[in-house]
Every structure is written in structure tokens, then in C-alpha cells.
Image (cartoon, rainbow, N blue to C red; front, side, top):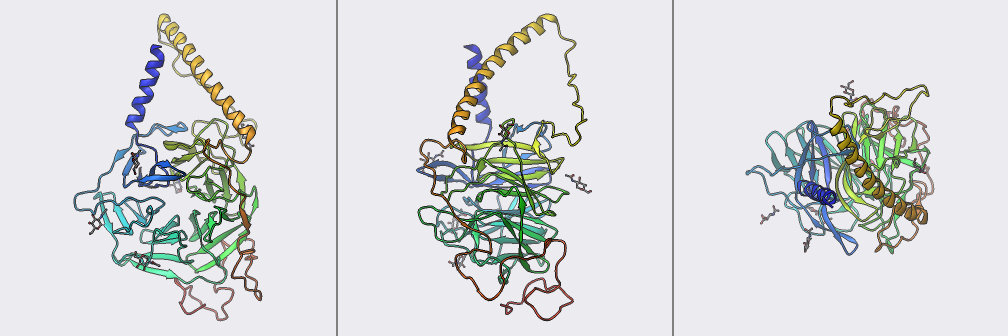
Length: 485
Ligand SMILES: *[C@@H]1O[C@H](CO)[C@@H](O)[C@H](O)[C@H]1NC(C)=O
Ligand SMILES: *[C@@H]1O[C@H](CO)[C@@H](O)[C@H](O)[C@H]1NC(C)=O
Ligand SMILES: *[C@@H]1O[C@H](CO)[C@@H](O)[C@H](O)[C@H]1NC(C)=O
Ligand SMILES: *[C@@H]1O[C@H](CO)[C@@H](O)[C@H](O)[C@H]1NC(C)=O
Ligand SMILES: *[C@@H]1O[C@H](CO)[C@@H](O)[C@H](O)[C@H]1NC(C)=O
């Protein structure tokens, strides 16, 4: 009884110290700190509600990243007095510019206008600056990456907080002159004819990769117009070229609300989470982790279920920090909006495991290090007491785990594709499949090959000119001449 009371109070105190759960927030790392902005804090009637303007930070130098579940002590980061008030946002775009600054763009709930659509946060001065001139448009459910401290590239999503598609163009911002210069880049021939939303972007060697999402087409009965993973759309920011490369390996189920993170010093992009349904408050897929090898154009399914970990989720955040990839917050298959932080050990980028687990041995002779931690120096009485306490604890926890596991097994057996639907969910209609650039339903041009860049390895080697251009330029244009299409 006392033990139960003790456990209950302990859990209760923990949740008071922690921030409340979030979904569809934006997080990034500046130096040794994670910063998260906004997101929804609750759900009701099949949608997420209570969009917040919270800004909070987690010091990774203080955090114990040796275990899968990171005990996180967030600090609310109020803006300095001369900063504009923070506006509530969800589904916003975020990109770290350097060790001190990150930028957010768009994101909001409904049609509430934003006073400042693009804002830069500076950690040193803890200040926010609304960018002027503002961008020609902004989006929610798009994605954004930075190629250097002064340049960001945003694409896709829904326009200005409406349900309409954002333009099928990359929105580029260059702030190297001190004043932002916005550029809506014309779409070139090998680019996608329709934009997407709920996708993820990762950048490597000046090339942006576009993972998943749903096509920006009208959805009937929430039937998603999915983008398959059979090929991968890319955009080279240096040569201003779009392309599409066939992929192989374990092709992921189409999805939105996933994250894609380039693992440091590697060619591996880790995809996490996502859902195959078009609703806002949607169930995560059970195949929630893949590694994409950008050299081999190959996907590998990663089974992370063994010891629990973060599990399938949507609307979470993922940030890389040293040899860890943190999975933060989001919405799980049990209908919970989460406030937790999990750490993946990415020391071997091809074999991520939850921190604290032994990675799969690359050579079968690998030995496990014996755990010879403190077993000496305690009086016998104390040991007996501890043993009794531990046995009781293990028995309680074991019973709990057994019950949970049995329940989970029962649910899993009855449902192959989705993780444990809460009771108020119905499974959705099967999605319509469109292979990228090969079977878009509209805008087909019969007389030229717009399907696939046949080059097997488009990323390291590029033609100096675009395939449809006749003349040879010795210089790569940074932006395309607007008259070219
Ligand atoms: C969410 O907002 C509703 C009203 O919009 C309010 O009644 C409710 O208490 C809020 N929930 C939380 C958790 O803040
Ligand atoms: C937005 O601007 C209006 C008018 O200037 C102001 O009244 C309002 O407080 C601002 N809202 C936020 C969240 O900054
Ligand atoms: C989107 O919002 C911007 C202001 O942020 C405005 O200038 C632009 O006209 C809007 N675009 C559309 C299509 O409504
Ligand atoms: C993943 O691993 C767990 C536990 O090892 C196993 O039960 C499950 O079948 C595996 N899933 C897949 C898809 O291989
Ligand atoms: C990546 O490489 C750089 C330079 O070799 C090194 O300083 C850095 O620690 C590496 N990062 C990781 C996560 O291994």
C-alpha cells in the first residue's frame, strides 16, 4: 500500500516537473541545447487543439543520454522584453542557421493571421526578430532546410494557414546582405508537377531530399494522395536542378508527419514515424523507422521494437546531437500526446539502436562487457533489505509489464498495419497510390520523358547544364533565370 502510494506520488511529481505533451511542434538544436516552439497540447473530436506559443529548451550537456528514455528537464524560454510576443504556431517550419540562431516560418492553426510569418531566434541575446520584408507567402505542413547560416529553402505545405496548396515552388531566403531576399524559384522540368505536404526534407552536399508526404490534391473522404517511396525526389541547390531517383531495399509505406534526419558524418538519413491516413489526429504506422542510404539509394527497415523505446508516433520532432538522435514528443498509437524524449544511439549510422542497448555485433566474436558495478561495501542487512525491496519492485513491475504486453499482443494480433487504435478511431479508407513523377494524375506531357532521371547516382555527379538546355554554361547559375520555362 505504502509502496503503491510512493510510486504514485513519484509518477505524479515527475509529471508536474515535466512540460505537458506536444504534437506538431518544431524543435532544433543550437550548440548543446534543444529548442522547441509551439505545437498542440490537446486533442478532441478528431483534431488537435490548444495550439501554443510555448518556447522551451533542454540542456543536453546536463541530460543523461546513456539511456533510451531521457529524463528531460525543460526550461521555459521567455522572450526578452524587446522581442515581439510569440505567436501560437503548429505545423511550422524550422531550420537552425548556425550555433546561435534558428529561423521559423509560417505554421498556425486555422486562418488566424500571423503578425510575423518568418522569425529568427538568437540564443545569445534570447531575442526574436520578425523578418522584413516578410515572405511572399508562408505555409503549414511544409518543410524547410538551411544550407548555410544565411540561406534557407522551404517547400510544400498548405498556403497561409488555409487548406489550399502552397505554390509548387521552392521558397528561398537569402539573408547574407542583412535584409532577407525572398525568391520563389521557378519549377523546372524534372521537378514534381504537384507539391506535397506533411513530408520531410533532409540536405546533404547541397542536395535536398524530399521524403514522403501527401500530394497537394483535394482529398475525398480523407483518402490520401500518397507519394510513394519507390523513388526519391531531390533538388540540387547549387545547379538548380530537380530529379527523381529510383530507390531499392525495404520501401517504406507511404506516410506523412514523419521526420528525416541526416545522421552526422554519414550518408544515412533516418526516417522516423508518420501516418498513412489523411486526418490530422491520425494513427502512427507500425513500421516507424527506416534508414535511407543516400549513396546506394536504398532503404533499410530498422526494427526498434525490442525494448520499447519511443515507438511509432506522428508529429514528433527528431534532432541529431553528437552520436545521438533524439525523438521528442508527438502523438502515439494509444492516443496520447507525449512529452518525452528518447535517445537513439547512432554511433553506427547503419544500425541505430536505443541508447544503452548493445548494437547488433558486426562481427560474431564481439564480447559483451561484464557489468561489475558496486556489489561490495554494503552491510549484509542493507543487502537483504535491498534484495527484498527489489524482489517486490520487480514483481510489481513484472506483473505490470506482463499485463501491458499481453494487452498489446492481443491488439497487435488483431491489427497488422497500425499501432493500437484508440477506441474512437476507425481505420481509414485505403490510400490512392501515385508513383512519383511516373503516375501523377494531372499535367502529363505525352511527348517528353519526364519520368525518372536515369542516372543511377544523381547526387555526386551533375551535368553542368540542365538536360533540356541547349547551350553550355561554364558557370552554374545560383538561381534559374525566370524566363526559362
Ligand atoms: C484546451 O482549450 C479548451 C478551449 O479551447 C479548454 O477548455 C481546455 O481546458 C484546454 N485544454 C488544455 C489542456 O489546456
Ligand atoms: C499582432 O499585431 C496586433 C496589431 O499590431 C497586436 O494587437 C497583437 O497583439 C499582435 N499579436 C501578437 C501575438 O503579436
Ligand atoms: C499569403 O500571405 C501573404 C502575407 O503573408 C500575402 O501577401 C499573400 O498575398 C497571401 N497569398 C495568398 C495567395 O493569399
Ligand atoms: C521486431 O522485433 C521484435 C522483437 O525482437 C519482433 O517480435 C518483431 O516481429 C520484429 N518485427 C519485424 C517487422 O521484424
Ligand atoms: C563528424 O566529423 C567531425 C570532423 O571529423 C567531428 O569533429 C565530429 O565530432 C563528427 N561528429 C560525429 C557525430 O561523429
